[in-house]
Length: 423
Image (cartoon, rainbow, N blue to C red; front, side, top):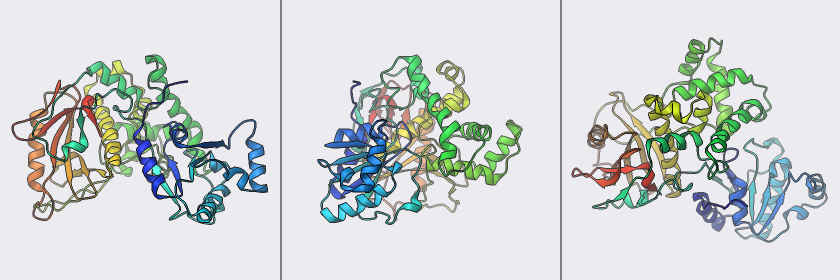
């Protein structure tokens, strides 16, 4: 059996179970929901068992306790195959009056909510799970902690072991658990397989609306070309018409993208709206991003070798990978990830905001040639923030791909290789 690599979701799940009777784990297909839940569960029932599945359904309708019984926490996998399980779990949580009772996992395709009586509010909480970060897949040494940067250390240190070739491979491989630890050939297939399943099946199953796979692929290509930008959906429709010569309305693009959001394929980054000193208008459009940058790799049909010879695309996908990791690390810390950009085009790639109001800012640069430029931009950004009404930033960081060492500059800006970062 393949070794289980500890996940950040382990801690998120444990914290949620301490405070609620049941937890629903949500996230994209193949991100490891069932495997992670199984590590925490004391008993498990798989509703999609090819031998027992039909019997489980009959047993549930005869007496729900047949399915709900078991040592707690009790995992019910693929619960959405019998949506009434939701109400039964909610009722049983009320009856028992205890926390840490049930874990629910299932397909990324939402169940038929019309059959549910109760929302589960107060009884069933949700944990959003994503693909693996570089630290979780053991591709980052983790010698620099994002959490520790909020304490503004005087010095940080660490050496980056990732080469340009490593980064190109990791971008294309993605954070899919099935890809980690495999040969390069097998690992690189996983994102393409995921992409094909989404295009050919899940995109129409999400709400039982038949969608044209060719249109979906054209939208995905355009979205991928504009990853990391704040392009509006109307702009994506225009791009599709120009590049793919396909008639496509703005409304169709919107409906397809909403479907992708509902199955966690798209994971956009909201705009940050802080108190600022200038009168510049803050742009509020979300930054376009996938749950994993390897989806864009599959949509654009790029390879590690292609990336190494196409630095603009390499840089965009590297940024997407960094945003994936920063978002998961922020989630671990109980915080949120944002992007800032105003009407004067001053921007900051990533802003991590914690519940207590502390925040830190990061610029993302693949190579070492733009470290000074990124640091200057961060300092300019800090001056824009009205620190009379908000806290000073806990840190300013340039997150890099190829810089060799982690260090703190004389101006206080941290330079951190992604291959050294963890939560």
